[in-house]
Length: 394
Image (cartoon, rainbow, N blue to C red; front, side):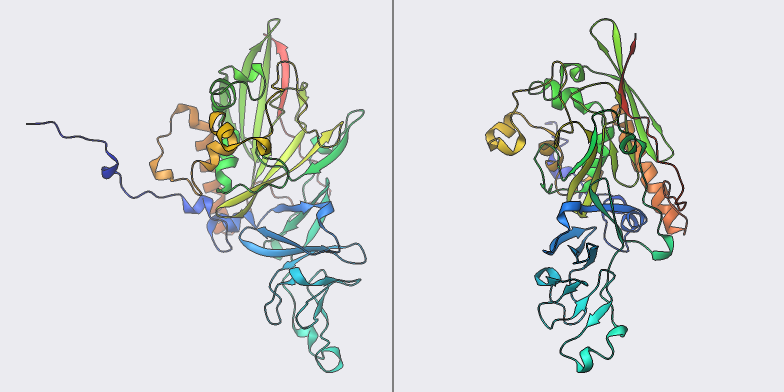
């Protein structure tokens, strides 16, 4: 009797993903966890007298700056008849809807209803949904959660304490793609990649040539552990002269990537922070703020770093296929990867720790508790991270 074929695609059960960790809309488990923190929704320069469309956590919003210089963030759909305020006109006191001229201030109060008697006798009874915003590190942050649970906007030591010649810069960068790019996949596929230490020597080193720097091509020794705000990966690699590079990378809830320069343009504490902003369930973007010495240069290149590699945005599709990077690997997992099809191994411990922590915090919020990392003390000191590249004697 002939041996039956096994392991064919026909035998695979329907694939599923972990909705509780990936879906970010209002009322979903992860959506409610996300809404307990501040999120960057644009650069400071994005808030102008021209309304700007913003999509965050599955919500369509409009960002603007009124004539008094105050940034505002309101829901796009006008509370009167539902047209978008993207076509509105920004004035001294707020934003005016193009349809019937209702004027709203930065906190959604209706100031004028020109089609109504006396400019709107009942205008105080309506309010355009809005979100509080603050400007920090060149970014505009918004809090989209329960008002009574609003924490203070955190500050970070690595962006507060500047070395000689440094200043703070911000950008809407994305993985290898250039400014402003939106990645067409779920936010978690990028966020957990920060702790996927072993993909670095494969994807960025040995698969298609050096993409970072030669020392990062080595297969490192790695340990993962929890921190008070997330998960960290501690890795070691040997460098010339009998020295050892010790590198700590962190993620902090909800979306903060604390990654020292992979081009190793110097040693010391982490230079920049990146926020993996979920646009909706199937798109994300990254906002970055960092200490720089040259505007726009967040990752100065060190000895042995790749210098001839094209920017992703300048590569052809064939060149991207021949030399894939993070964009190809993560977007290639699909819009939301099928977790049921995974076969996690020992090298995936960091990913597993992160998923466990996220699940724990999702459940904590569902019980009415505060998630880790939120602070309600306006006098709290800046947060200090362990992350950085450090050179020590072997």
